[in-house]
Image (cartoon, rainbow, N blue to C red; front, top):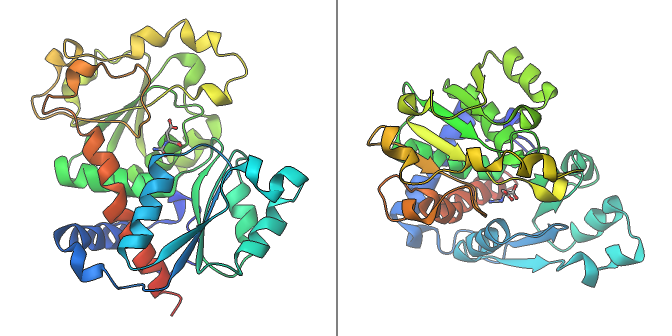
Length: 304
Ligand code: NCD
């Protein structure tokens, strides 16, 4: 991989994707072999929005490679509270770390911040924009469970504000998947994303109901309503029930359907699915560690 910064799934070629996933598979098979790979490496964590999985799995990944993290902490406890700009913050923190991980509520913030630093900057979510490392762990999970050959995937829920969806759709185009997008009309893919996907030659279809398309799917990727990005949440609440699934919904699905969710879930997936073979979302979250170890390994290796 020859990228300095990891900003968007759009920048990842098929070869880049396979390289990260292959390295992640090596990590998963023999984590000990990577235990002192990046001794003394420091990862700077800049999270301007809440995070559990992304932040903790990046921390676990840095530590399992022999490195550590320096963490800005919450916005409330940092100088951001005093009015410091993002550009100044990253310019300072690059002096403390070998790579930076940034999550920020503004779309485009990771791209902007990357222009101010020389160390690699990894986008851990920029508003409703992109979340490329989530995409890599999603792809790892898909490759393990369903494979990329003749892949048909349904992506359901908040397609308008869901950055995991925007990232994943580009990468699925890169691996030639058939993509079905299922949402209320008010939460369809943004026009700009749809346009880019068409330009990239994507095969996409849009639906307002899951039922007609469910039997065709190898993977169903369910997403949370991004309540924090909604000007008016009541619009979604009116239709939300139609986009929840439970064990009964899946009676019409293929036996080997893989159900995924980037998590956190609220009520999109009923708990009666958790103990079935359909449920891959907890494994998906666990895959965040080997995949982020692989990505950090490649990114830091590229700096040497
Ligand atoms: C996602 C995010 O932050 O975009 N969470 C995550 O990183 N797994 C999804 C979400 O918040 O709904």
